Length: 398
Image (tube, rainbow, N blue to C red):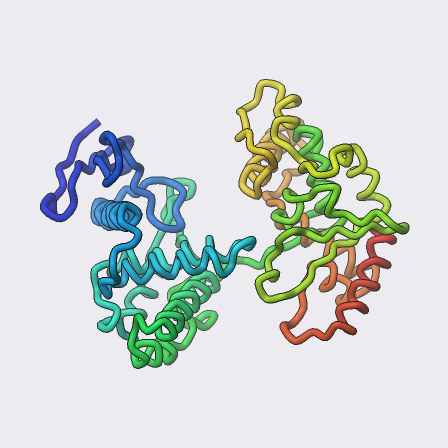
């Protein structure tokens, strides 16, 4: 392990050091009892950075967040870092019971890594363009090669969140109006007209391959995969499933998730569960107020494999990683037995498999309502018609 002293030790305490080619930071943070080591992971990355300049910026962000948390009642100092902290606090309360606070935190963290000490009143259209340019240049190592970390669509989404933060700041009298008005002029990145890459659209995966992978998963993960493929529900809706959220009257059940992607917009989400999915789900309905899918039950069938995180229910992360482990085992088995290769896929692809089945059975509109897609101005009458269509579809295929 080689040690590398901080270049700006007056502003940033502690020591940045390199371990296995990646940078970590050993420091005693405010309100901490002892020095600890922190991996310097940039926003959107999975691992600590290999770039020292990036490591310093991440360390600055960690230090500023620690200072803010140690004195949450400190007065507003007009910097980008302070504005970001206040907007995150607002978002956690305003968008509670949704994923929006997490999405916001990831997006605005780009600001605290790019220009944390800049005054809000000095932030300009040019600064936002420079920030967006830095997003397009962010890379991650995959199979030994640098690949773009963020696609065009994600960059546009995060820039829009940042603009939304400045609109909130204007309303809270934390930023001058002219700053937000200038940011509105930034045109979003267009397909094929920028350095940003476009990822391939999410596609469906054959039921044949899904069943092969399910055979290499624990029984509970295999059942979760099958339910998702039959109902088209999102992973976040699947992992939160409890019997008390399901209306079991009639031939087709109705599951109303406690939270979902568009709940903060006042939309209602009801997922029909057809006879095939009911057969798979019935074994998990014995505890009315408890989660159906619990990691401790998956551990009972883990057969000596890597342990999973023991929480009161699977998360989208633990579920997704479990599917990926089963996928790798199935791919190795197929290669060993000289069978056709199994393509990579994630739980999100299972949702699109459900949509493909729906479209083949009852058309495009059926696929849209199964996925829960609708415009913001859908009327209650149209919503009722969608639910009726979705229930007929569930009776046929799910």
